[in-house]
Length: 357
Image 1: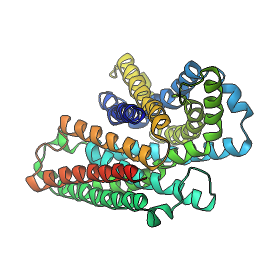
Image 2: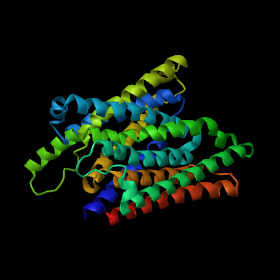
Image 3: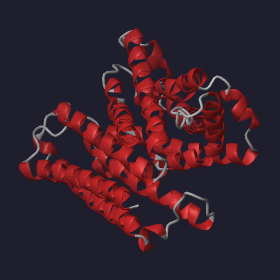
Image 4: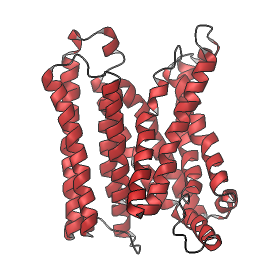
């Protein structure tokens, strides 16, 4: 029952993440940096402490009493992840929801699984697997096979992007939009690698989540693990993410002189504000539900990969719905579909590994 609940929570989180950029695409008359930083205020500063306060009323005390090492590493990985989150927006802008989401999240799935394992190889912790687990244990080998299949899926998605770029001459101006495969694929690789740091940030902030879990279990005996224990950790991780993004967006607003976007008479201010708030809040909900799923399945390769799988599935469904691949030739469409299916297949293989543990 716990496993089923965990899968459902991860699906809801994946749906939120795969859908959050859709409201941003409806924003009119604002530059990317103008809408991104405004939505980010909801994602990183406004919504996380509200969610933590509702679920963990004493979350501020837990943060104040946490060790400097716990706070420092959690913030650091949030800072690095913030670069990944920032470039995710750029990657989606240049590659589209479908291709951008597949490449970025596929890479994040790979590195999010391996980075904690490398850490725990050198810092052995009960209940955690080191990198040797993926080469010496049948379940671990199965996970590694799944990751290699994922790399193949990423390659197929990249190939689809190249084919799409070659066929742009035959597409409409609307279909071309901001598409730029060369810039987009570099941004996507950086984003995919650094986005995986969020999972490591959760690991670094685990002592705070453990305190929240212990307090809840003391007040609610025999009721299992606390669903919302990670909400306190998210507050610190997202402080780091906010710092990275706000510095970059202020730089762009200054450089491009786009602070004036907020006062444009031609831009629907109230509607744009609402869309950014909706996009930012929806973005945060991915981790709100990820924490719930993780409390049922356990934090590690299985939870992270399952979360990524659902995000890839939903983001590509939106890509089809938004007609990002409309008008491309058959080989291009076949390549992106094959890439999506291959990535999902890799998730199934990794899921099988959990049954072998």
